[in-house]
Image 1 (tube, rainbow, N blue to C red):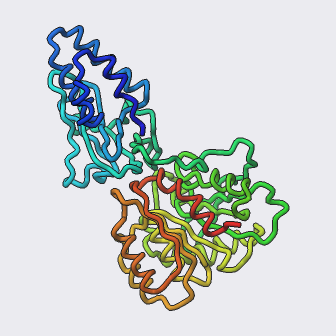
Image 2: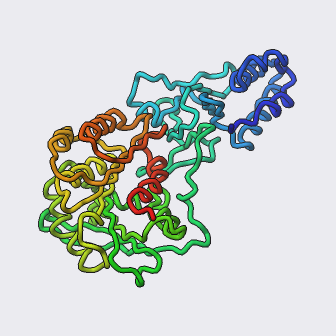
Length: 404
């Protein structure tokens, strides 16, 4: 467990609880009691000294948020009229059913919030000050990047980091091309993409290829970390070498314009862009096998919806689909498309988080797959709608599709 405070705090605070009280209360509850008792010390210099000692101990040991079993204690120290914690667990304040407002230790600048999560959960969050300012947790060194920058990261005690999202120092690295442009007549504009080729590409022939939507994020080492995971698994000889095409939905002329809401919504023109333009270009320029069994599509959220649409609309083109946290709510007709599908099923890997993610929509599709007696891989994790979850799943997906 990531909690080291019990002995340290008892040594720091003279007004400590009895052994009997410590045995009957959790360490988190004991800490809250200690903070509340310390606040009653009349001598301000002594009171401030003790609070500083407690806070320094917690921050030096990287204990904030404090986690024990299924309990998390969020802490913030600073002047404020109100403090709340918002993140995956309450849809970033969108889910009003969950009260995430903190309580202030009377007479201090310390705020706290106690919450319950699965003991192996990992979640993104920020602290909201006075209902206006959203900040990273200044006492928490752990961060997870999102498409909008970094978030603070809650790591419950039994969560385990995926080591393959970090480079193996001695491993050989593949190459990620510079941005390439293709002018699409189907879409009426230019699309940019990058191509990953594994180390030793020159000696390979007849390779499989993975197409990835939201490619600018999947290929980012702080987000999807896909190139790192590919390098590591290929280096370990756990998967066959794979060419990966990272397709970017951002307008090349104005990267503040993201086209994914249009492109990924069961868009026939976007599918035709792949089948008529992008795939032929890749197959003319790279040593890939030109058949559906060796061609896969990967996406998350709206990209997961898109991957499902591609695979069940053109199974003769895409023989496999990796579907992460699919936003099926955006185009619910996708359920009928799959229900009515009569061809040979694509190879499928589908994932979702259980906290603030597209969980119910994903489970409904899982039920349809089961009703059709499909063979597929399915993964639920106690995480949210976050690149921290999706990057950690990349090794599972790649091993399922390309494992040796």
